[in-house]
Length: 114
Length: 112
Image (cartoon, rainbow over all chains, first blue to last red):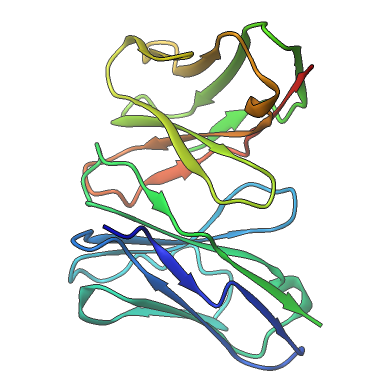
């Protein structure tokens, strides 16, 4: 089947605007992750969803960041009042949810805040 | 705090040589280990996974795990210029997927 998809692929916005990033995980995958990757840097964990459990939000950098996952499938990451330091690639990954299963990454959304 | 460490590189090797990438992790209670490759401007893709001590081979790639010494390595034999990328080590600490930590990555450059 299809892999992880993300939209939009690129987003340019003005400082102070809100943005929504979407992730469609692989069908049947119960675990979904959001990461942020700044230019030349490693992956920064943001949030983790597993089935219907409460999400692990420990990686969200500020209260301007929020995420939801509807029906255990599609997820939306929202950044309110964007700042220039929010510019990065936002990657979504999904897995079957066990520790033995790898994460499969989407192509990412490249966010530029002017 | 659980940590995964890698030498950031760049690691440069000539074409045809063996590239050795190393990763250490901070906690002995770890479940599974992964190597991802990330080309510039692309998202990470899985190269190898390993769960038990010892070696695991897949084509030109060999993953080595030593839980007692808390390190995992990736060997790339007969390195090709197309192997030039950043290699990310990832460690999962529990059975539920939420303690999944990536290292900062090692940039590999294979010189023709």
